[in-house]
Image 1 (cartoon, rainbow over the protein chains, first blue to last red):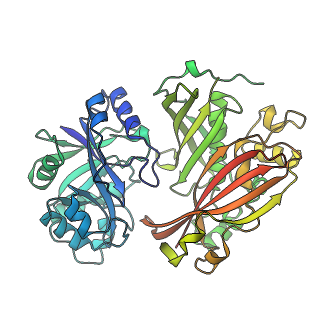
Image 2 (image 1 turned 30 degrees about the horizontal axis):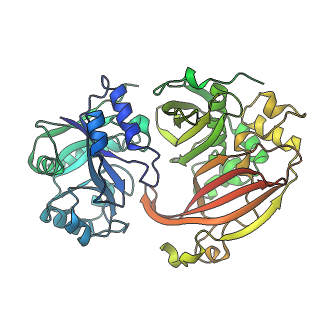
Image 3 (image 1 turned 120 degrees about the vertical axis):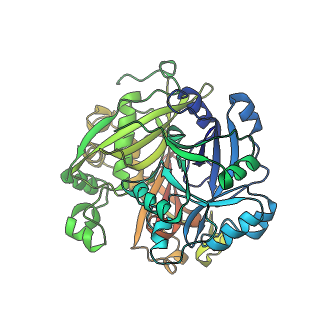
Amino acid sequence: MILDLHLHSELSDDSRAPVEAYLKVLQRKRAERPLDGIVLTEHRQFDLARDYRALEDRYGILILNAAEVETDYGHVLVYGVNPDILARFDFTDVRLPAQELVTEVARLGGVALPCHPGRPTVGLCDHYARKPPLDGVVAVEALNGGSRKGEDARVAELIRQFGYRAYGGSDSHLVSFVGVCATEFDVPIRSVDDLVRELTRGRYRPVDFRPPR
Amino acid sequence: MAARLGFDDVQEGDELAVRSLFLSKDQVRAYARAGGQWSPRFTDDEGARREGLPGMITPGNMSMGLLASFLEDWAGPGTLRRLGTTFRGLVLPDRTIRLCAAVTQKDETARSIELDVWLESDEGERWVLGTATLALA
Amino acid sequence: MPLDLDPAIIGQEFDRTVEGPVTAEELVAFARALGETRPEYTEPGLGLVAHPTYCVRFRGGRFYPESLYKLIDVRRGFDAGKDIQLGEPIRPGDTIEVRSTLHEVYEKTGRTGSMYFVVIRFTLVNQRGDVVAVVDNRFMHR
């Protein structure tokens, strides 16, 4: 099962991608990017009422919801967002306490995973250079479709040193780049609960569908 | 009047032929003057470094202008109705840049199309991202 | 509301300034600086119109509302992006009224650190009352 774990729709302030347009691209590019689903990780927000089941049925592609939040250790993707997590953390706060986030989200039934860790300022690598490492991190984003030269390479050392699992995502803000990086899971995923379980304890790996340059 | 692309000539998923061009410092200075943006960061390497930049940079407005011309060269003059861009990185002159676009949606009622547009380096780093709406015949 | 701004100023017009008249020479110089060769944009005459992005050249009498100048060092900002909606073409001889509003202010973190984003909307209207463009300018400041 292959999912793009990190992308933004027009609900995110710097994205211009309607969700349905993402699905059309995945349909057209099925041979090059054989994805089974996407996980929308909107910036600094989460709407429990958001429901894409009609699009899922029409296109046969799984659509799950998550969030990208901003912390004192950089950006973090939160999967399995529920009312308890939303009551505990204000996602609009750009200085969330990362250790509390990782610990509490896990306790409340979700999982919080640092994203683009090699990116300056908002990635974990920069913060680990001068602050204690976070407890409880299970995986980091080893492949990010928006990374600049050298950023993903920094992550390999991070993973080696801390034994983190690795996942991938496109970080797409435009329709055209959906699925260029993704995550391959060993078992099917049908729901957010499945996703949280597999990200926390399952087997998966980042996959790269970018054309060679 | 130059030819305009027809609405029925275009399909969702069509990709425009990439345009590669060498963006010279002289061209950037000419734009800065004509665009009312004559300031050190756009005209002078040393002046730009005093502002904490690596050297003179290309105005975001110029990147937009180049993308707009690229789109209208494909679709015809006057077809551009909307262009939205995010400037993700510094576009340094005296190097080759690539202008790219792909059709993402067709609106049958408005007879308009939506495109993703972006400006990238020769190595594929995307510095300007955006979308555009073109009105076709 | 970031920067302790009064939310009431969001959406309020803070400046209205008339610029121009636009000259053929300005339109041609702008288009040629972009490498344009099409006669619609580069040949003086009755058919000359402005390049579609010429509208970004208009900035009104002040870039920000007065209250923002006290909270932000406006000299240390970067253009984060623009959205332009195009209306009637701009032609030589046009005068353009620039109506400025503070559209949005928000905070986020990125590669270069924590930043405030200020979105200023310019509505450009020609002397005939036609809207020639609506330009949303996003600027980032530390």
